[in-house]
Length: 431
Image 1: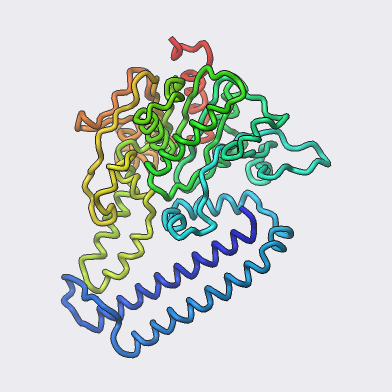
Image 2 (image 1 turned 90 degrees about the vertical axis):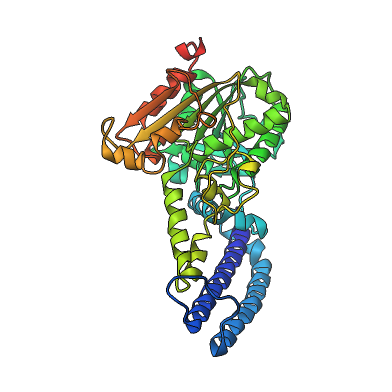
C-alpha cells in the first residue's frame, strides 16, 4: 500500500477513533449526572450542561481538522509515495488492523481496507533490474528470497517470464489479522515446501479478515472462477489449505461455488484445515461475555462500545460462521445464540483437519481449557454434539498435535510431515 494512501487512511481512522472516544465520554458524563441505580438501563441523550457543550465543540473541531489534514495529505501524496516506499512491516501492521476493524474500514471507504487479491511468490528480480509494479519483496521480514506478485485482479502477471504454472494450483488462505506473508514463518513456508516436493503452484490469498467470512467467501469464489478460467495450462486438480479463519473461508468459497455451480469446484480434490475453528474459538466467546458484562450497569454501559469494536470477522469466529444466513438476521454483538445453518463439508472432496493443543498428552487440563491457545481440538476437528453440525472427517483424516500453540503450526515440522503425507503424490491419501 502506497505511503500517501496509508497516511490518509491512518488519519481518517484516528479521527474516527476520536469521535468514538468522544461518544464514550459523553455517555459517561450523561449517565453519572443522571445518578441511576448501579444496575439497570442506561439513560439516553446528550450529556447535560457544560460537558455537553464542550463535547459538541470537540466534534466540530475534529471535523474541521479532519478536512484540513486530508487536504494536506492529498497535496503531499505523490512525494510521499516516491520517497517512502512500503515495507513488509507496514503490510503486517495493516493486516492486523484489518482483522480488528476491517469491516469499519471497508464501510468507510478507508484506504487501509485491504482489497482481496491472489498472489504468487516468484524469484527476486536479478541484481540491477527494477522490481516490477505490484511486486513486494518478502526477504526483509520473512527471510525468503522471493517477491509476491499479484495475479488477480492483475491476470497479465500470469505471463511473467518467471511464472511457471503447474497443473495443480494450491490455494493458501491465511488467518485473522494476518497476511499472505505470514505463511512464511521462521524461514519456512508449508506451501513452498509442498511445491518443491509435490509439484503444486502455491497461490496466496490476501484479504480483509475483518469482513464477514461469507462476504470474503463470495469474493474468493468469484476471483477463483476468473483466475482458474485464465490459468495458462490445463488444471489437473485444485487443493485448499486454510489456516485458522482461512479454513472457514475455504468452506465458504466452496459453498458459494456449489450454489452457483462453478466449474472449478469439480476440480477440487482435497482441502486441509489447520487450526480452523469450525465450531468457534474460545477467545471470541470470552470477548463477547466481557463486552456483555459491561452493559449491565449504566456506569459501565458506555465502555461496552469498546467491545463492539470487534470486527464482523472476529464475531464470526465465535461459532464458526461460513454463510450469510449465519449472521445476517441478528446482531452478533448482542446475541450469543448460535444461529448457524448446518453446512456440511462438500462431497466428492477429501477433507483433512490438523488440530493442536498446548497440553503434552491427551487429557491434560490445559488442553481441555485452552486447546492451542485459540482453538480447541474438538472445534478444529469438526466435532459437535448436534449431529446436524458435526463434520464427519473420515478415519485417518484428522491429526492432533501435542505441545503446540496455534501460530506455531505455521512452522512446525510435524504439520509439514502430515501435509506431505496427505497431499504428496503417490501417498496413501491418494488411494
